Image (cartoon, rainbow, N blue to C red; front, side):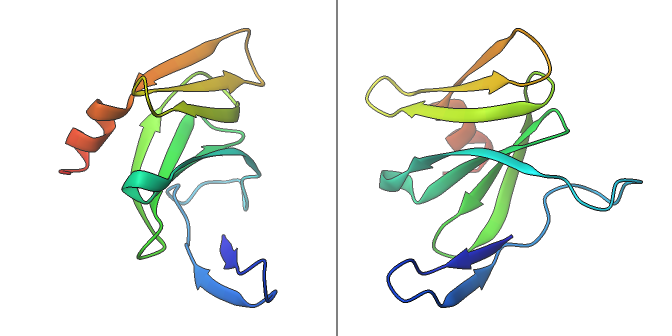
Length: 107
């Protein structure tokens, strides 16, 4: 995944891959949730059961956690400290606590 500066159109970062090598050459991305205060981007990894976490300062993947199949969209409710992930593969909504993610990241 490549970062783009929307003001200039310049490429500014290459985030790389989140998933281990697999038979599938690429994995389409779904929705994103931005935690500006902590400098983190939560990205639904389509055709999987995962949400990836990217450190926006380093443009590096820092975490991956399991959710319902084929995550589609990520919504963060920062004041309440929770995130939600909708599924494109099941009638499920995964809820996760942001403080647990932060602890797992050692922050």
